[in-house]
Image 1: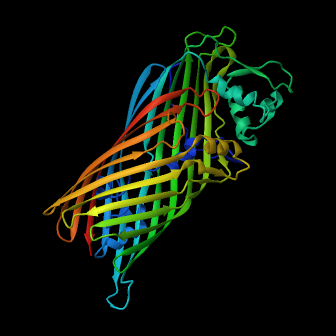
Image 2 (image 1 turned 180 degrees about the vertical axis):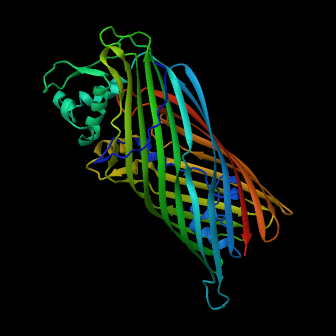
Image 3 (image 1 turned 45 degrees about the vertical axis):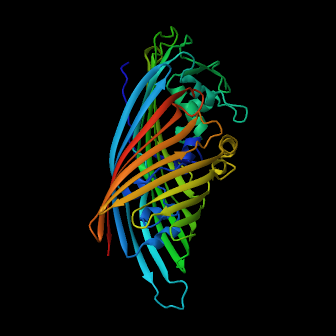
Length: 501
């Protein structure tokens, strides 16, 4: 049967259950940072923890807003390009995705007290919006798997695991899809698409065998399309003591909306003589949305006129999320009457919480008067503190996150040189893998550069940033987990307009 891609459109039938299967990817999409923000910030790879004077810098250290001399506003747009090169059992595939986004907008208000008896002479109030993550991305992987078939995914739920049990044939015959939990729904999908059969016709039977040919050489491909964002609105306050010590605080409201469509296809070069099963396609659409809260604390000290030192703390982000999901299976099985099995039901799962890890950042910057600067930030984040809640629903995944993830270091270096009205910028960043064994999700290396031109009370900045990371990507969350090895390359162009007022 010719392969076709089905994008499942939300319909009119809805049902609610408590929890679905979660993966480390579901948590790390919020815990792992990207380089975002204004063009000046990106041009220096985000190394602004002791520099300040940029609206995006308050994300690194909230005390940074105190270095504005006047009321200030910045608006930023970006062009995103994500290139994925996937390798799966000797086959290499490529995919590209491009998108545009108004990713940053903010304003800072500066207040100065000229009273000579007051040591707290200045404070700022700032408001800033940033798109922390642009999830628009497409990934295609394909190859011939000599070992494992998609049947292992469905049989894993039908036959069960020791802590889960299995599902009886009577339940598969008589239950309604929407009345089952997530585990039993996956078995229900496989049974109704003729991917497996019971070993006996007894309603109490809970043992099943595959209809997939056993000779291996399964052609498989996966096409995943993701769209959406993770945005953050920040309210900032900063103050200065004797032009030596600068303190700041952020209160952050996060909101996210992601749609992920995944289509897994498998076909067979030989057909089982009993069932005639020729191919299977399994489509899933997951819509995740919700909001969260976090806060930042920061301090910057002028050690000398030119040397600044900074320290900042970023709290965990507590996301309150909800998932809606639709699934369908398409089997080409003429001898067993197999065809489309689409429940046409949107499952609405109970809300849950994702807690990301906190972060500490130490910073140093040297300011060469009006000629330029050099800066460095080093951050540490313990990803093993990432967790799902309520904990009694997610004991398995939380135990895995605690044992598999580790403390990771992030390094950002940046420099800026000014000549007349022009500014020239460059930067480097390194993000260590959150995993103890980084094969699953590797280290990230990135570079950036940028230009700025000042018109007096306003400025325009342009930046280019590049980063690269390797990671494993499994077509399914369990059972058939043979991963494709993916190399992702991000190339982003950012332009900002800023002005004093």
